[in-house]
Amino acid sequence: MPIMDSIGTNSVTKRRIGILPIDGFAVMSYAALTEPMRAANVLARRTLYEMINISASGHPIASSGAALVLPQAKVGDDLDLDYLFVVAGGDPTTYDDRAVINWLARMAREGVPLGGVSGGPIILARAGLMAGRRMTVHWEHAAALAEISPHLLIERSLYVIDRDRVTCAGGSAPMDLMHALITQHHGKPFARLVSDWFMHTEVRPSAGPQRAGLVERVGVNNAAILDAVEVMEANVAEPVSLSHLAQTAGLSERQLNRLFTDKLGRPTMRYYRELRLEKAQSLLRNSPLTLTEIALATGFASSSHFSRAYAAQFGQPPSAYR
Image (cartoon, rainbow, N blue to C red):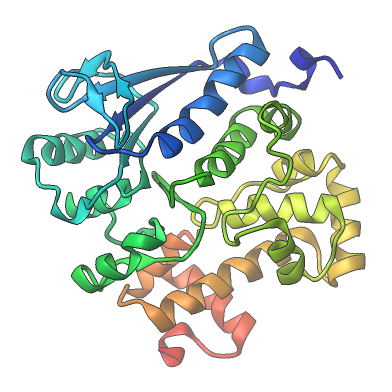
């Protein structure tokens, strides 16, 4: 298939991606986030992602090694962004640049989706921007963050996409995250081309460390089912449509439903709803969120809709489980 034909129909949209590296950031995390977007531009032969490096001071940002990032903007500038990612290393639990934290809060109020990579999720949390959102962080910081902020919904995942928040553990994990985002934006075939560019042939799902973990959780090794479930796990709070899942799997909606029914015993969207309800049950058990907050975090329009679906699945209302 020609490269241009593999790009989804929404690829005419150019996305402006703000990247805020914090002094001491890891080059590996930064590169794993930005290089897939650069490759996407090269493969598409047009700018799909315009990347804007942002500095807190306006000066170059020093990595933990010898590399410097030259900024095109500084914190406080009036930027029209589609995403804003904070990339941090070192000890982000001590980070307290109020100008940056206030600016991040302003971006959130303006509706800009915010992302954190490696230690970046901690900075988002310190800005009060992760309340009621599922999140992940580099394993090095997970225990300290849980002790400092026990109310946060921290998962030991490679990345978590929860509505307008995107968090990633860092290291090589941003490549898996970008595969998921490029799939959302431009379709699975094009995202695979980008991953193959870097010989990143074993793309890992958000909830596990490797593809084998997904096979074990789902219980089948059918590629179309695994592709669909991978998208489901990355879109718990904002469920995607059956047509989107079918397109990802490279099948018609009818074919995908038949495959799910044959291999997993229920149609596609029922499986998807059960997956979201299992996540809700985990939040009931492990978080202090209200039923309304859990409903929103797992893709239900209201607490009443969530309660009905939960009772139908588990035989009792969520209030009784808690």
